[in-house]
Length: 343
Image 1 (cartoon, rainbow, N blue to C red):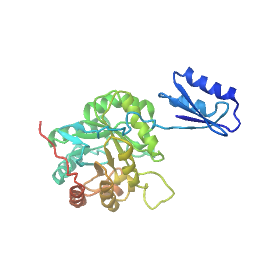
Image 2 (image 1 turned 60 degrees about the vertical axis):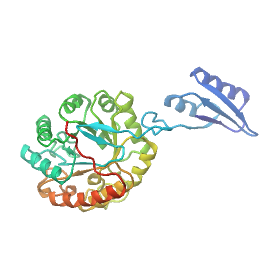
Image 3 (image 1 turned 135 degrees about the vertical axis):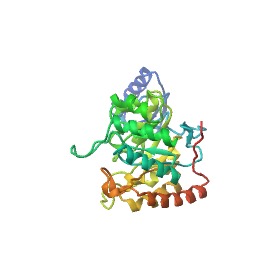
């Protein structure tokens, strides 16, 4: 961190800045110019200290040198994280496919979808049991009953599963039924939830919030990691912009940026990123080309009857078509599809 003083700052004010730095257990390093003084801060300053110094007498501005996401950040020489779950590797040069219904509607519905997506090449089954909805009158999910169906489908197909958790008190319940916990976009900055998710052994996928910057997204991952869980996956799922031609704006560039700034695996979610089923394939392929470690898509036997997100869900036939393109792009990028390894 570097502190730039105001023009005309007095020697006493500079000395006070240096003393404040020392009181924090850090070391000041003064550089005197013709018109102003710059004070470098040697050590690891906290975010609170950085904010305090921005309004300290004589300070013009504070410049951050290192990234605030110490655990989630790439770091010099830090290898890409590989996460092992249910006989599958996420990250580290392969491509994973997460597929399934937005919301688990019944046992039969989930079992049929699970079998179909596995046959087409998916390796992780997604299914929502607790669903955050804009309207309180919309279907909110089957809750624990849905989680039990998800676990049954996992045993029947051999696929690991992912499901959303919405509140701290449900972390243990979801973790007992699903292999991967999903922090949804609406909860990206639900800090008590992130901390609680950091206490379990299950991998946690953190979706980018609809108005989150990439740095804020990575800081959400940092919360989970700081609580003790290193197995974090990032998911770009579209952000809110001025354009209303799609549900969200799929930020493909964020995939490449996140891969550069972080060592964590990155998944792209073109279903939520566009909200339009026929845009899922081109955005999925674009995300893989930009460096994503996998995709997450919603699949439903009859999207026109879906209780949630029907317009963005693929039919079984369309998912088959998507997988044909995914295989070609994954091979071209030298990141072949991950395969389940039997225990």
